[in-house]
Image (cartoon, rainbow, N blue to C red; front, top):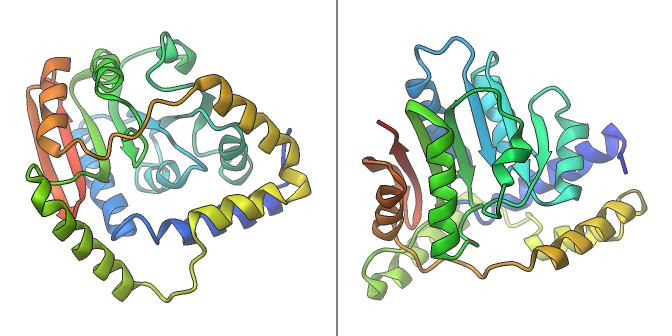
Length: 255
């Protein structure tokens, strides 16, 4: 099932380019997340970090560059994206296949001690509120006191009447920043499916997606609702630390 380093590099680089269409100020958001991780891990010489929904390793790779002594565990349900991550970033993290939010998913992580930080970008919005609460509780149980959950995603405003406005601001900013040449999500996946070297992994991915069922998207949940679920899960200190349009970095600290 492995792919060559050259193939992995090609597809990961294309992934990075197409993601710029969707993650507003993507690089700055990554930088902010790394800033928060640095802050909460300032007294930890070898922090343990969890990357939730890691995909092909975009955030894990940036964390590893910023905190080279960190022990990073990266988890995703997509076997194809995980294999691209393993081949392109072999020394960045320990890559784990698991379905976040399902029963026993944290057992697959193989953690020997508590986490100093858990990070995620555009990966938890597909969870319905009950599964999201369960996931937040699982992460809270894994974090050491003082550890943080840092979630970068698109969160609509509390007033639904304002959601069109924040989405418009985001789109316009992305248009100004872009060069018009980035392929989109659908074309990336279509092209990847046509690559013979990825064929077996793509078939495995489709079987995995069918068996997991999926849970619908959670784009309608604003920051305030996420904060309610985080408090119910045991986090008492919750705050946004960065926002452009409806793209936000939300931090929850464990006491």
